[in-house]
Structures are given as C-alpha cells and as structure tokens.
Image (cartoon, rainbow, N blue to C red; front, side, top):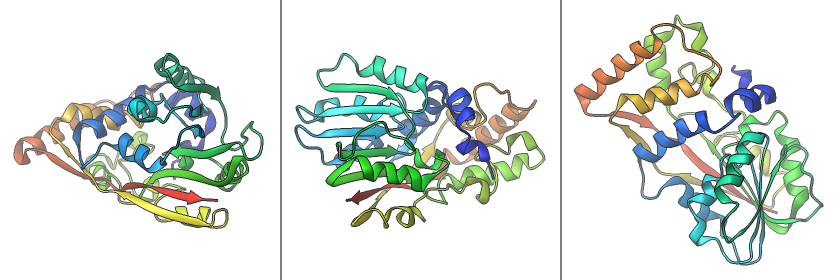
Length: 276
C-alpha cells in the first residue's frame, strides 16, 4: 500500500506543496473528460447553496470549485476555505481575494477544526478524505461544526477509477520499483481509504441520510504529453523518474493513440451528500 497518501509531511511538503501536481491532474480531466457537465459545476449544483449561508471547504486546493462557479454563488454567503497546505491556501487566496463574495482563508487540518459547534450550513471535502489518517475523527469534527439540518458533501473515487493506467503500468513497468507510489500499480495500491464503495460505512453513523451521486464520465485522451504529466505528478515534485521511464511511456502512448486515435480511460467518481 502507498502510505504516502496519508503522510501529512509528504502531502504538504511535496505532493501538495503548491498546485503543480494537482493542476497536472485537473488539466487532464478538464481537457479530456467526456461528460454532460464539467466536474466543478456538477459538484457546485449539488451544494444547493442559499443566500446568507455559511460554507466550509476542507482541502480547498487552489480554490477551483469557487473560481469556476463565481457567478452562481448566492449573495451574502460566507465561505471559509481551508487546506492542510499553506501553499494551497495562498493560491486560493490569490485567486479569490478580490471577488465580491465573502471568502476567508485558513491553513487547517480537518481532524481538528478551529470553529465553534454548529457554525456551518454546508461542509465540503472534495477528493480529500482519502488523505486523512483518521477519517472517523475528521467526520466527527465535520458533524460537530455543522448546524442542525446541515449538509456534508464528500467527493471521492471508486476502485475502477483510471484502471487502465494500472494496466499500462503493469505492462511497462513491473520491474521499476520507484513507480510503486504512482497509480500505475496494483488494485490494492490504487484503493482509497475513503471511496465510493465504502464511504457510506463512514458516514451512516453520523448522518440521518446519505445519498450517493455518480458523475457519469470517462476520459478519451488524444495526446500523450498530458497523460505523461499526470503520471509523473503522482511521483512528486521533488523526485525524478527512473531513467527511460518518460521515454518508454511516451512511446507506448503515442503508438496507442496513433493506432486507435485515442486512449480510453475509465472514470469512476462521485460524491456523497450527507444530511445531519
């Protein structure tokens, strides 16, 4: 198993020190996803925000959820964006601080939320709970700061998400131990601690109602370079891949795209809407 996924030092000091790695992955999804709606607007629609509400996002990254939905935020909402990474908070602040909406920004760990009980109408964890060492503790903190009738939006992936990358990895790189931290490995390595298959098990003891919404989509990738950047982003910005890895992967992808016109990659992602 890849323990770096919940290693807080690695996450804040390397993988999410800034948005470089995350952007490589977000850009691939944004440019090549086949879906009726883009991801961030799809998530935002399910928030069902109302004027004057207080919203908390944990693991906000560079604030893309809000950047892509600024015109649809109801008036008088008070939105607090937090992330374990100081760099991510700084980027979100830089992008959103001049907006007409009321944003606040704070480095914070979801396992220890520095807010009074019953503070927020909505709490959001967009693809981040699988990075948390103690998920039950984090969910307990979320329920503590939610108001009565509050809602928790928790997005994650399923076991089959990007499964073709694992198949490519096993075909090309079984002998490259240095890639064991990427998603080019076994199903066990790719399985998340909080995922579509088990998320309700974490949530049902804390919430009166839990609904799962699936984002119907897949990837059709027509260029090798964005996919290579995605794969390399999983290694981390302070590391270099073993010699020949990028060349070998690029050659394989170019051949597949030249033969088939694209590379099909399964997406299995969605979110839970949990009501207090």
